[in-house]
Picture 1 (cartoon, rainbow, N blue to C red):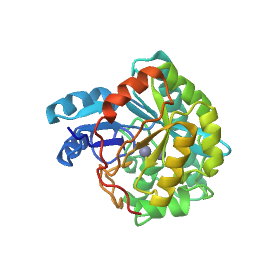
Picture 2: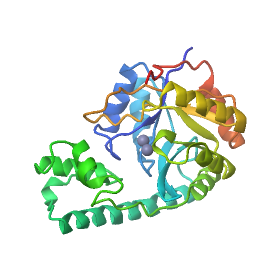
Picture 3: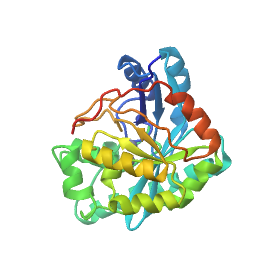
Picture 4: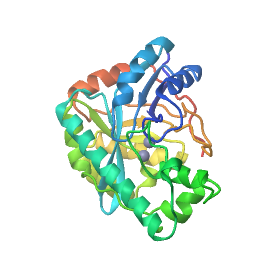
Length: 289
Ligand SMILES: [Zn+2]
Ligand SMILES: [Zn+2]
């Protein structure tokens, strides 16, 4: 049987727009057979998603997107196939949640300092475990300060803009170690958003990275080829996903990704379970950009 896979999805438990249940129903409607919900620094959607996945007849695998920091930039790592009960991972999630809330408050303070006041009634973070820039941007839209989320980022929240506050977080090497200790493997998310290109990938591979997210809607075919070449050279797995958030302005649908792999990088147990996923995988909708 052909498996259709999307290994990079977000619900409103982090910065996506729809609930875990709606996300899974959408995934099933799109013909996906296996998904991983990769919330920012959280694995709660795994628990919630299992029941919904069963109802919709699709497989859900444990996933997480961990914000790390190195070389003066945010680096997102995707963790897969780990044990969600791992104590080390639970500690990491608690730690990251605390830092996220601190950063969130710091950004609101910066905005206040430059005369942008957001009232609590505009800020909706009740459902999320990962309050962040998207929630502030949405509050600015609701308050009529900017016309859309994109403008909020461009004018205030992006790196180098007045309300930008860097992530205070762990190093990629520490995140990789924790996921490995939990029995999982780690893929570099959307390398297109990171500075440093192959040099960065080399450093992460030296730190124990197992895979690279090759297929992502923002990756050109040329970049995909380059990344596949790199993975073959360093014997890494390749992963893919749509990074779908269900938000307005997103120009791609969920399911725009697939997973390919015959590399031998990664923890042995993760490889074994991954090889099961990998049987008969075909592209869902390869990126043309
Ligand atoms: Zn990301
Ligand atoms: Zn993501």
